[in-house]
Length: 502
Ligand SMILES: NC(=O)C1=CN([C@@H]2O[C@H](COP(=O)(O)OP(=O)(O)OC[C@H]3O[C@@H](n4cnc5c(N)ncnc54)[C@H](OP(=O)(O)O)[C@@H]3O)[C@@H](O)[C@H]2O)[C@@H](O)CC1
Ligand SMILES: Nc1ncnc2c1ncn2[C@@H]1O[C@H](COP(=O)(O)OP(=O)(O)O)[C@@H](O)[C@H]1O
Ligand SMILES: [K+]
Image (cartoon, rainbow, N blue to C red; front, side, top):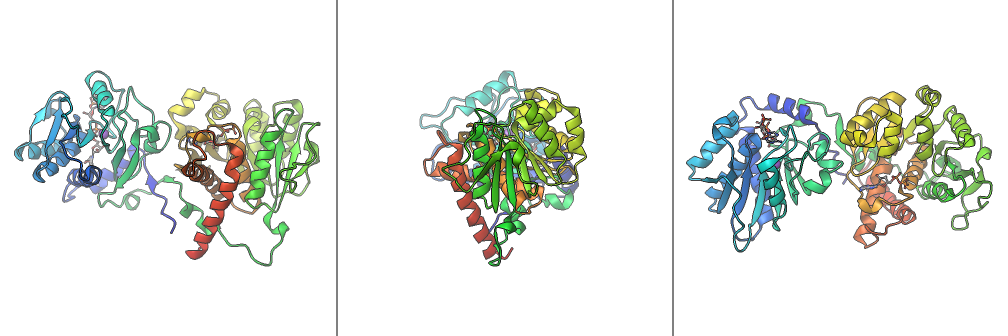
């Protein structure tokens, strides 16, 4: 069964939900949070002996830590609570949590104690959650760095301390959790940029709060349930014309491989016919590994196409510009990748033409391409990947995937998605070309841009994950190897969808 696509909220959304759900909540949200985190913690400890170290901060995240510490004390477990701030300045709920902990006989220490001889059973970071407002420094930076080095399971409460909730940026330094228990819903920072390196395995504890009931989410994690209705079995009475004509335009001298990779991916994800229009006059006329592909001169692609991708190995020559300009005016689903995006960034007239299109447009920038399109530097894009992807979609009236760790899929209407499949073994030349081919294949088969982009992005990462489980990667995974795994997974999804009656 396909898992639901969980909602994701930035801080402002979580605060709004909290404000609506909190009044009169019994037990209080903090009591629920501390208990839920304690339940996750118990699963991590299993039968590990030794005390638990809980580091508590000056706000409500610290309050959660004290609730958790009290539960463990009451269960007879040895807990050391490190707290170095002024308890008189706690917000109300945290003050109650602290008082209850003290009333249960709990004590605090004001510096991080040395590890016991047999180590900590578990280390818990309850320093900062969604209220982090500035880079960690001084004592808290030292605590976070030394807690991150403890060779025990390390559980972060709500957010790893030091991670910016909305962007996944590390502010100063950041706790490296093996596990994170996050409350109410997922947050963008857990899933993109530096989040996955610091959050470890994520458990969402909803605290009996129906987040989506209080606030319609704009963001969701990518799961096949989002596009399951598109995973339709093929009609027996169908033919190659039923599955679209896909074309890839690119392959300038020295870069034919990029176009061929995209074309192969389009073929193996089910396009009825696949053409590659190659700019290199000396390009081969047949792909001997995939003779099904129809290789043409770049100017000789058929008039009738279902979907066209421009960019893999395109280069930035005048003829590339001319071909791109002509492609943008065609009334078909269009994917713009790589140098097509760089040409677009340099030419406001092309941008205006993209904006004026009525057929779907999909943009597939990596962060540097996104920066060129937005007229900023790559660091600015990475500082707020979500905003960058949404800005591109809004400005160019296109669906966008901003690639990288935790790819962001943004829609022109302001909705967004974060993909958590894939791994750093995908940081290898040609991976983006394969993604472009997968998207083009689904568009050619009549999928709408949103579903095609979500499915291809998720599939791309899931295929890499499956290969890595078999020892094909992460290190050394090559883009071409991904294509077969993507085909096999996609067919598995079709079977699953049919079983579940989509
Ligand atoms: N509301 C609820 O009922 C519920 C909330 N819940 C929990 O509360 C968490 C949010 O709590 P929160 O808003 O108190 O923020 P939190 O993350 O504890 O940090 C704020 C404190 O840190 C300080 N501070 C910030 N940055 C700093 C820095 N770099 N270095 C040093 N200090 C820094 C900041 O000080 P200030 O900026 O005011 O100087 C303030 O004192 C949330 O993540 C979840 O765990 C759950 O129990 C569910 C119910
Ligand atoms: N660390 C990572 N985690 C997850 N996915 C990654 C990571 N690094 C790269 N990828 C994925 O691999 C692909 C690389 O695309 P791109 O940078 O365009 O490569 P190329 O231009 O070499 O084909 C993107 O889909 C990207 O999201
Ligand atoms: K924390």
